Image 1 (cartoon, rainbow, N blue to C red):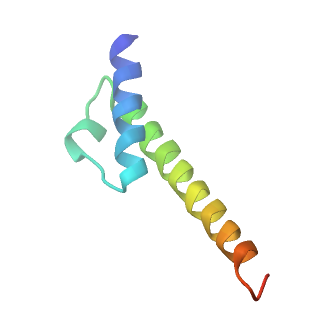
Image 2: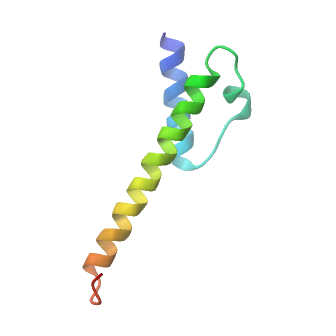
Amino acid sequence: MEEAFAAYSAGHVDGTVGTRDGQRANDPDTGTDYRIGVVDGSVAAFQAELIAEVRRLLDSPEGV
């Protein structure tokens, strides 16, 4: 179980920065956990960028 959490965490970090480790992704034991972490990290990065853009638009003189 610890290996699954570690693989997910590594995938989450990789997804957040926009990278992917093919070897980890294809691991027969923890590849699925890693890939889910990558997707979750990618979604988290997208949400952060979206919120930052909305804040930037709301703070601009032109507004939304």
